[in-house]
Structures are given as C-alpha cells and as structure tokens.
Amino acid sequence: MKIRDGTIKLNQFLKLMGIVPTGGQAKLMIQGGEVLVNGMVETRRGKRLLPGDQVIVEGKTFVVDLDNSTG
Image (tube, rainbow, N blue to C red; front, side, top):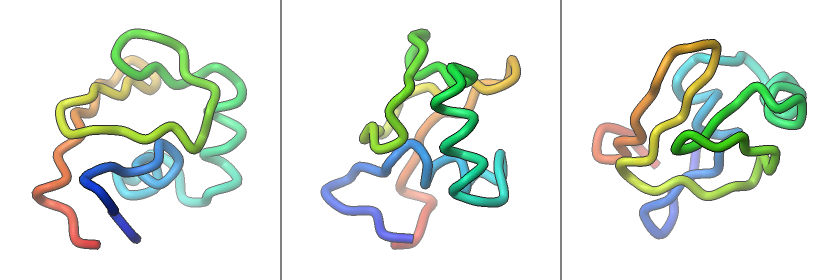
C-alpha cells in the first residue's frame, strides 16, 4: 500500500485498519455516509488523510498514524 506525501486515501486506510476486506466494500461504506472524518460525514473515498485525523466507523474511532505503516 502506497503512502505518499505523508497522507493516505480514506479507502486505503479502511483496508489497512481491517475495517473492510476490499476496496469495493470501502467504497460502498464511504458513499453510504457510514464514515466520519474528524466528526464530519465523508463521502469521497479518495479523501487524503493526515496523521492525527480521526476516522469514525460504527462508533469506533481510529486515529491516523502513518509512522507505524509501511509504504
């Protein structure tokens, strides 16, 4: 999974964190309004996340920390 410029796409983040197993499922979840980024509904799967951003899915909060990821 490529992480460039210190950012990661929302759909890639969902897969990396094991929230969804496929990109197709990530797309459906995001477009369905089921994902919040920093408290706001985000419907763009290509939304670039920065370290410290909070992603909320099904009441669970995930904080973006790209230092522990390999790219």
